[in-house]
Image (cartoon, rainbow, N blue to C red; front, side):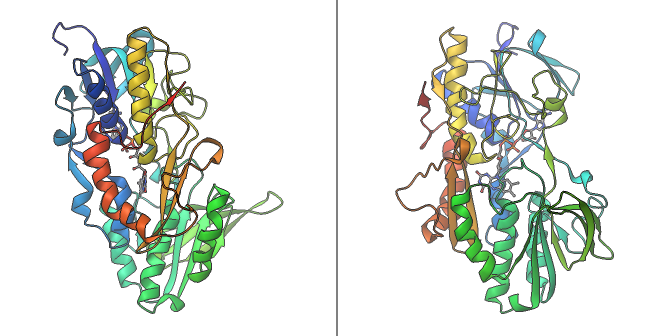
Length: 409
Ligand code: FAD
């Protein structure tokens, strides 16, 4: 509790990328703030590297650190889960039976992977060639499956938007194909991409370089094709295909490898709160990240209802915006920091090359480097593979705001 037993200056829900980055950026500006971070997990995961783990290019043990080692020195870690958000009373009910009062609230519990939305999936994950880079323990299994597959059919699926790192479903496919290509096996493997949506990538500028890889790897694209059921033992996936005239038909495909990306939604604590918008995410102003009704509430990261790409890269730019605006709110000053929707998706099209897609609201390109972003580059692979984990752990989570200056409103 704060020294005088009163409300915390800031309560942060979630100690993932967004929660820790926001705390670090706040304390960098005002070290005297009393901050409580509610986070149940003793491990903090760097999820962007799971794609590389699935491609056999990253040590899984290096994708996490102890949460305790990342909580800023001046913040208090409350090791439990938030159960109910009560913005009218400026308090949060916790799963351990306690509650926290706050002057300001930062909501950053990430999103929920809805594995059970696909019939039969949960019980077969990690067996029968059914895998997903969206879970730490399964990313290594992806690589196991890729390494052992010599011929047959490999299916890669993508659910409806929004999802975190919208490029990750196809990144898994490209890295797998590259391995099979290098091993001389690709010609014997029928590779299919099944996307519930209607395009390969939401930002048109990046589609042509991606299509070159689709052709090179001879992968079949299936749009409006949603995975609805999996039968592990018979290795059969069921898709609901939407036809051009809007009709629906089921299709079954047998597989030797199935890489699934599950449907995603806001966590229940967010969906069921007064802070949620119609789609269940935290309703904030797209620019200031302040709640549209409760002025003392801010949000960032995957739980936030902005239309940017849900990525850790987005958090890098959002954290300073939340920090500056929250402090302005506490000081009774106008909010002056703006977020332009930046997000980034390093598309690992082969082991050693990345198409670095960086863009903001309305798909406006926001490249960080003065080169054509729609070209697969070795330099961007080196950035993704070697520099990004350090930028994340040693800079973003420590309040060192690299390439993250907010726009002045
Ligand atoms: P998280 O980092 O997921 O953290 C949420 C935290 O909230 C967790 O620690 C959780 O334990 C906690 N929590 C949950 N519920 C509660 C509760 N009720 N009470 C308290 N705490 C709670 N991003 C990129 O920028 N580039 C990439 O290349 C990239 N690739 C990705 C590949 C994969 C396979 C995946 C899975 C993600 C990828 N991302 C990538 C996305 C990135 O990891 C997320 O966007 C980022 O982690 C979001 O941060 P967050 O803090 O909102 O959520």
